[in-house]
Length: 214
Image 1 (tube, one colour):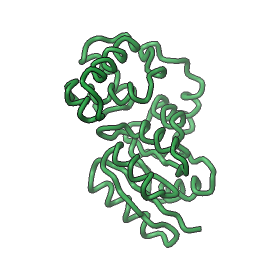
Image 2 (cartoon, one colour; image 1 turned 120 degrees about the horizontal axis):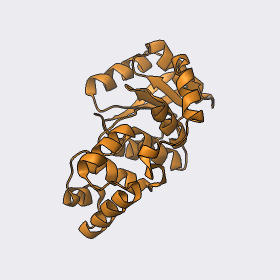
Image 3 (tube, one colour; image 1 turned 60 degrees about the horizontal axis):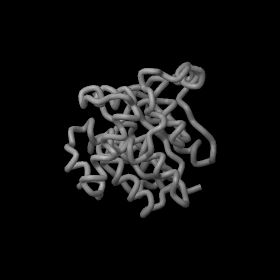
Image 4 (cartoon, one colour; image 1 turned 120 degrees about the vertical axis):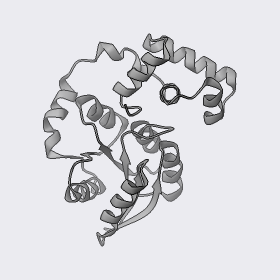
Protein backbone atom coordinates (compact mmCIF):
# COMPACT_ATOMS: atom_id res chain seq x y z
CA UNK A 1 0.00 0.00 0.00
CA UNK A 2 1.62 3.26 -1.19
CA UNK A 3 1.63 5.97 1.47
CA UNK A 4 1.82 9.71 0.81
CA UNK A 5 3.38 11.55 3.76
CA UNK A 6 3.67 15.21 4.76
CA UNK A 7 6.41 16.24 7.21
CA UNK A 8 5.99 19.29 9.45
CA UNK A 9 8.74 20.75 11.63
CA UNK A 10 10.01 24.29 12.21
CA UNK A 11 13.63 23.23 11.73
CA UNK A 12 14.76 22.63 8.16
CA UNK A 13 17.40 20.04 9.08
CA UNK A 14 14.82 18.03 11.01
CA UNK A 15 12.33 18.19 8.12
CA UNK A 16 14.96 17.05 5.66
CA UNK A 17 16.20 14.31 7.97
CA UNK A 18 12.74 12.87 8.57
CA UNK A 19 11.90 13.16 4.86
CA UNK A 20 15.06 11.26 3.94
CA UNK A 21 14.27 8.48 6.42
CA UNK A 22 10.76 8.06 5.03
CA UNK A 23 11.75 8.37 1.36
CA UNK A 24 14.14 5.45 1.83
CA UNK A 25 11.11 3.21 2.34
CA UNK A 26 9.84 1.97 -1.02
CA UNK A 27 6.19 2.25 0.03
CA UNK A 28 6.47 5.86 1.29
CA UNK A 29 6.50 9.11 -0.67
CA UNK A 30 6.99 12.51 1.00
CA UNK A 31 4.65 14.77 -0.98
CA UNK A 32 5.03 17.97 1.06
CA UNK A 33 6.85 19.62 3.95
CA UNK A 34 5.81 22.58 6.09
CA UNK A 35 7.56 24.80 8.63
CA UNK A 36 4.61 26.00 10.74
CA UNK A 37 1.16 24.88 11.79
CA UNK A 38 -0.85 27.18 9.57
CA UNK A 39 1.10 26.15 6.48
CA UNK A 40 0.58 22.51 7.48
CA UNK A 41 -3.20 22.89 7.55
CA UNK A 42 -3.21 24.57 4.12
CA UNK A 43 -0.89 22.00 2.53
CA UNK A 44 -2.78 19.06 4.03
CA UNK A 45 -5.91 20.26 2.26
CA UNK A 46 -4.03 20.85 -0.99
CA UNK A 47 -1.81 17.75 -1.13
CA UNK A 48 -4.14 15.33 0.69
CA UNK A 49 -1.45 13.10 2.23
CA UNK A 50 -2.32 9.79 3.83
CA UNK A 51 -0.21 10.52 6.90
CA UNK A 52 1.05 13.75 8.48
CA UNK A 53 4.17 13.57 10.67
CA UNK A 54 4.07 16.76 12.71
CA UNK A 55 6.05 18.33 15.53
CA UNK A 56 4.11 19.15 18.67
CA UNK A 57 5.46 22.72 18.98
CA UNK A 58 5.26 24.93 15.90
CA UNK A 59 5.12 28.68 15.26
CA UNK A 60 1.89 30.43 14.15
CA UNK A 61 -0.25 27.43 15.06
CA UNK A 62 0.74 24.69 17.49
CA UNK A 63 1.16 21.14 16.28
CA UNK A 64 -1.79 19.88 18.30
CA UNK A 65 -4.06 22.66 17.05
CA UNK A 66 -2.90 21.99 13.49
CA UNK A 67 -3.77 18.31 13.97
CA UNK A 68 -7.22 19.30 15.21
CA UNK A 69 -7.86 21.47 12.14
CA UNK A 70 -6.41 18.92 9.72
CA UNK A 71 -8.61 16.21 11.20
CA UNK A 72 -11.67 18.44 10.85
CA UNK A 73 -11.19 18.52 7.07
CA UNK A 74 -13.14 16.30 4.71
CA UNK A 75 -10.60 13.60 3.80
CA UNK A 76 -8.60 13.46 7.01
CA UNK A 77 -5.08 12.01 7.02
CA UNK A 78 -3.80 10.11 10.04
CA UNK A 79 -1.45 12.22 12.16
CA UNK A 80 1.71 11.18 13.99
CA UNK A 81 2.84 13.76 16.55
CA UNK A 82 6.53 14.14 17.38
CA UNK A 83 7.61 15.76 20.65
CA UNK A 84 10.87 16.78 22.30
CA UNK A 85 9.20 17.12 25.70
CA UNK A 86 6.99 14.21 26.63
CA UNK A 87 4.66 14.38 29.60
CA UNK A 88 1.10 13.23 30.36
CA UNK A 89 -0.34 16.60 29.27
CA UNK A 90 1.48 16.50 25.91
CA UNK A 91 0.21 13.00 25.18
CA UNK A 92 -3.31 13.89 26.28
CA UNK A 93 -3.45 17.06 24.14
CA UNK A 94 -2.24 15.16 21.07
CA UNK A 95 -4.72 12.32 21.45
CA UNK A 96 -7.59 14.70 22.20
CA UNK A 97 -6.73 16.70 19.07
CA UNK A 98 -7.13 13.55 16.98
CA UNK A 99 -3.57 12.23 16.60
CA UNK A 100 -3.33 8.52 15.85
CA UNK A 101 0.35 8.24 16.78
CA UNK A 102 2.78 9.81 19.23
CA UNK A 103 6.56 9.42 18.98
CA UNK A 104 9.29 11.07 21.11
CA UNK A 105 11.92 12.89 19.07
CA UNK A 106 14.66 10.83 20.69
CA UNK A 107 13.16 7.64 19.22
CA UNK A 108 14.91 5.79 16.42
CA UNK A 109 14.14 5.85 12.70
CA UNK A 110 12.60 2.39 12.92
CA UNK A 111 10.06 3.65 15.48
CA UNK A 112 8.98 6.48 13.17
CA UNK A 113 8.63 4.15 10.19
CA UNK A 114 6.59 1.72 12.28
CA UNK A 115 4.37 4.56 13.50
CA UNK A 116 3.62 5.75 9.96
CA UNK A 117 2.84 2.22 8.77
CA UNK A 118 0.64 1.53 11.78
CA UNK A 119 -1.52 4.66 11.53
CA UNK A 120 -1.80 4.17 7.75
CA UNK A 121 -3.50 0.87 8.52
CA UNK A 122 -6.07 2.68 10.65
CA UNK A 123 -4.56 1.70 13.98
CA UNK A 124 -3.02 3.77 16.77
CA UNK A 125 0.68 3.90 17.59
CA UNK A 126 2.30 4.98 20.84
CA UNK A 127 6.02 4.45 21.40
CA UNK A 128 6.52 1.71 24.03
CA UNK A 129 8.35 4.12 26.35
CA UNK A 130 5.15 6.18 26.59
CA UNK A 131 3.08 3.52 28.34
CA UNK A 132 3.32 5.18 31.75
CA UNK A 133 2.63 8.60 30.25
CA UNK A 134 -0.55 7.35 28.60
CA UNK A 135 -1.83 5.88 31.84
CA UNK A 136 -1.08 9.15 33.65
CA UNK A 137 -2.74 11.18 30.89
CA UNK A 138 -5.91 9.13 31.07
CA UNK A 139 -6.18 8.93 34.83
CA UNK A 140 -4.84 12.30 36.02
CA UNK A 141 -7.44 14.83 37.19
CA UNK A 142 -7.70 18.15 35.39
CA UNK A 143 -4.90 20.51 36.37
CA UNK A 144 -6.47 23.43 38.23
CA UNK A 145 -3.49 25.51 37.16
CA UNK A 146 -4.75 25.27 33.58
CA UNK A 147 -8.28 26.32 34.42
CA UNK A 148 -10.34 27.10 31.37
CA UNK A 149 -7.72 26.21 28.72
CA UNK A 150 -9.55 23.08 27.64
CA UNK A 151 -12.68 25.18 27.11
CA UNK A 152 -11.06 27.71 24.77
CA UNK A 153 -12.33 27.77 21.20
CA UNK A 154 -9.93 26.97 18.36
CA UNK A 155 -9.58 30.67 17.56
CA UNK A 156 -8.93 31.52 21.23
CA UNK A 157 -6.19 28.90 21.40
CA UNK A 158 -4.62 30.48 18.30
CA UNK A 159 -4.76 33.90 19.96
CA UNK A 160 -3.23 32.54 23.16
CA UNK A 161 -0.34 31.05 21.19
CA UNK A 162 0.27 34.26 19.23
CA UNK A 163 0.25 36.32 22.43
CA UNK A 164 2.81 33.92 23.89
CA UNK A 165 4.92 34.27 20.74
CA UNK A 166 5.12 38.00 21.41
CA UNK A 167 2.72 39.38 18.81
CA UNK A 168 0.85 42.59 19.58
CA UNK A 169 -2.92 42.76 19.23
CA UNK A 170 -2.49 44.60 15.92
CA UNK A 171 -0.10 41.92 14.67
CA UNK A 172 -2.50 39.17 15.78
CA UNK A 173 -5.30 40.81 13.80
CA UNK A 174 -3.10 40.89 10.69
CA UNK A 175 -1.92 37.30 11.18
CA UNK A 176 -5.46 35.95 11.54
CA UNK A 177 -7.03 38.23 8.94
CA UNK A 178 -9.48 39.78 11.41
CA UNK A 179 -10.24 43.32 12.53
CA UNK A 180 -8.33 44.94 15.38
CA UNK A 181 -11.54 45.14 17.41
CA UNK A 182 -12.17 41.41 16.96
CA UNK A 183 -8.59 40.63 17.97
CA UNK A 184 -8.99 42.77 21.08
CA UNK A 185 -12.20 40.93 21.94
CA UNK A 186 -10.54 37.51 21.52
CA UNK A 187 -7.60 38.62 23.67
CA UNK A 188 -9.92 39.80 26.45
CA UNK A 189 -12.01 36.63 26.25
CA UNK A 190 -8.92 34.44 26.49
CA UNK A 191 -7.73 36.24 29.60
CA UNK A 192 -11.16 36.06 31.20
CA UNK A 193 -11.60 32.39 30.36
CA UNK A 194 -8.26 31.27 31.83
CA UNK A 195 -8.34 33.78 34.66
CA UNK A 196 -4.97 35.29 33.72
CA UNK A 197 -4.49 38.97 32.88
CA UNK A 198 -0.71 39.34 32.59
CA UNK A 199 1.12 38.50 29.38
CA UNK A 200 3.97 36.88 31.32
CA UNK A 201 1.48 34.52 32.98
CA UNK A 202 -0.15 33.75 29.64
CA UNK A 203 3.27 32.84 28.25
CA UNK A 204 3.89 30.42 31.12
CA UNK A 205 0.44 28.92 30.58
CA UNK A 206 1.06 28.49 26.85
CA UNK A 207 4.39 26.78 27.55
CA UNK A 208 2.76 24.45 30.09
CA UNK A 209 0.05 23.58 27.57
CA UNK A 210 2.60 22.84 24.85
CA UNK A 211 1.50 25.68 22.58
CA UNK A 212 4.96 27.25 22.50
CA UNK A 213 8.47 26.15 23.41
CA UNK A 214 10.15 27.39 26.57
